[in-house]
Length: 515
Image (spheres, rainbow, N blue to C red):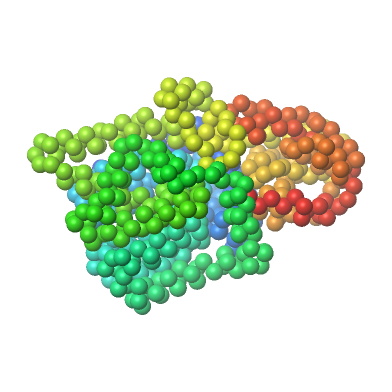
């Protein structure tokens, strides 16, 4: 590992200073934009998970949760604090892609082009704009690709051990990175790298990755394999159906027009150019990953991690086209187009504009974001809409709770339909005396209802007639109101349901909702 450390140090010194400035700008830009809207739905859930540390959760492994738990313990859970980690990872991703470019014998200019490709990618911008396991996943993919390129260039085979360690932690962050492991193992058969399939360090690296991942598997076993149920339900009921053609078109639109030219050039070069023969396995990995994800009706952004070597190869190929003034024209045109892409497209990915300004801007460009889930579309795309309405929701719930006689509050809980609502109520309800919100959604179901003797529920959403079967009295207290949030979160009734006819715990299995 000492050899790898020395190589990485040398690579770090080889990265042009301009790349570090681009990375620093990327970090600062994400931090600034991230303060313009509120918390994202999933961030509330991650904060709740950090209050319940475990080796697994219904919908994700624990790596990002342990990181968040440690971070919150030191720096708190404010919006500013939470957004630092994904912003740092975004900056590191820019540097890693440049390192991959240099390691593939790219020039300094090519490394700057690849850095700008990351900066200006709408999909990568959006993923890195809030705290989630996805920003970690992009980092893990890029780091694994860098190590793989070092191995392809003849580095010590013991690097497979480091590859396995990083892959293991990547799996403990999000198991979809296993797509990279599967694609690599299949792709190796078609390249000279096939000889490493029987290498002791390669095999040991695979074993290490599996062992690091086993606590999550063991947690699933102890809890009845909820992740399998979650994935099955999400594929059937949640994820929008998408054909392989639409999946490919989504890669073009989500990566942006100029970036798509770059990655297509990079993919073609990796697959067919003799100058990239030693790196051909990187092209095969993308193709296999694409086929696996498209065949599983996956969300298009799941493939985002596969682009670093394509950006690198595309930047290298583009930088070598033509001679003299033709070459200079191509290179500086590419640089200018990537900068312009960032300027014009970034407002569609991160909160640069006010909501009304965004709606007008999007309409003028004629760009409508395609959603990857089955639901009614709102005024704003989901990655923006899911940052609105939460404080107002909590205020309405607080009003309902505060309307109860003091004697009744002791036996009252709040029930929400999903983890976003429950997490938001718990986050914004801190210090207001509200009881913790419960839900049947994903890990909230596992956390249960607690020990309180519950007679009254304040219920967010749903239908009155459904609740009247288990409560003696159900009244609609108020409704939510926020025009920018997702339509299914707007105009929701908030009920006060009294005199539960049976113990809430006896109903708990019936409201489990893993999706």
